[in-house]
Image (cartoon, rainbow, N blue to C red):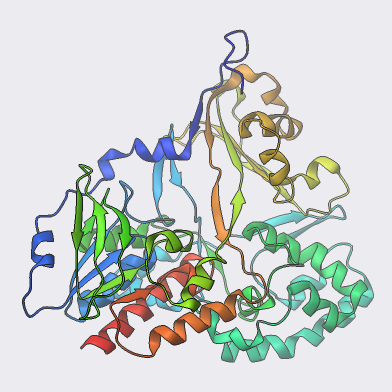
Length: 487
């Protein structure tokens, strides 16, 4: 974006800058770290990463009697389940809701006394496919699918053939622990539906239902393993909800009762010594280089950091780490002057095959009036379609400038750029790609990990599934596994 004073003065504020400004959320460096490095009878566990996976693992280890410390490189606790101050807006930074099929997550919330805060209103959107509007979400209810505008009678007639597979998956595969379905990680979503419905009917279903769901996750239907999505569809009646306590309600609670050492960056982890323990080399908030050798290390960081962080990984672990790739979400938020405020919240979502070329480039857009309760000013949010995102990345244009003409098409008050008082760039690595074969790799690492006691364990989305419910389930199950192995 031009900084020429003759051009409109749009102040860009990235998500990173917003997070850095939230120093008040930083945790004080606890004095208990020296105790972790000393001997004694109590087993010592170091968890790397204070997202929901790391916090959940630490919680289980603490219950099992371990002395636990969590290292977190950011100033805040919660990972992708957190709300932060970004410019004039305080809101989600990544995850926006949770699925009520997240059994481990809701069980943990119940133990902590906040289950009612994790529940909330159902999040349903309206999808525009060029034929009409219809409700969309991560469900596969046949009555709703039958009512999709533009769906042919032949496709509607064929849909019930899918029910048997979904019923079986519901009984056999945990959508939060996808390794339970690794034996069926053998074809893409597109291949599965073409095999089950025929090419023409599958094309319609993919265009109007599967791709819009994949759009939210950043997954191409022709590349994504069927097991990344079908276990969720198998739940059928599951609701995706906005937590009453906000998306950060669970991680805030866990962070308040567990010792999180923020601004503590792990440099590398050495292979195990003769006792089977690993040494973790890290930087303190004051950039001092230190090291520590606990009994157990749980690596609950993002999978993309594993290869350069963990030395001496097994062949299977290295293979998994080298196949962790993230989708990219590109979202721009334009904070508005009061004179450009909408009278109410409204917007729309579109399929990538929409006949309108501008709508095809747009995942969704929303405009919001001022909110006295949250003290939010009016703002407009624009989500670039996943297919359009690589084109923006190659354009050498700031995201806000790239998206502005598209958002102006939907909300003409933005044609007067002087009504824009601030811009927040939400662009981030989004979710792990789940191509055919990735879930099998994940299962191999988990089988190796479960085989017996060791000094280093892996937990998180990269060994469970690409969402917060899977990360939580991974943290809890790995924490319990460590307790079994060591106690």
